[in-house]
Image (cartoon, rainbow, N blue to C red; front, side, top):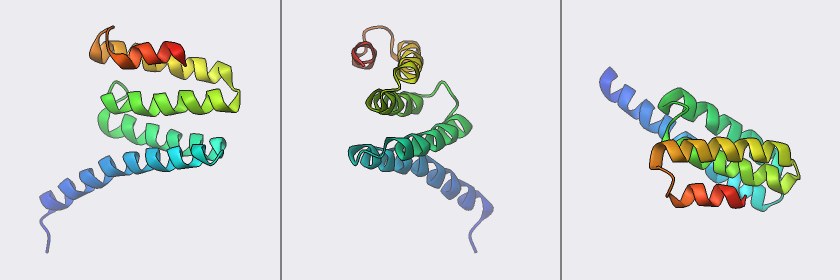
Length: 108
């Protein structure tokens, strides 16, 4: 039998892995032109990241980056701008103003 501590550690690893899998699935969906489905996957990833790492985590930058690109591809420029601004603000908090991610956000 596994100790409860080991089980907890494995559960944490699974949750960490799950948001990354969701991001990968979202990427494949958007490449295939399925942006709405991709956004759903990313919203689920966003929930997991918020729950396990907090809304100000480094992982959130990646999720917001993909959401920005998807909304842009969908022609939903208002949402793209909102996600882009959130991503830029978070990246600036985490890395400072001179990180390449913040520069990219302005291009999106």
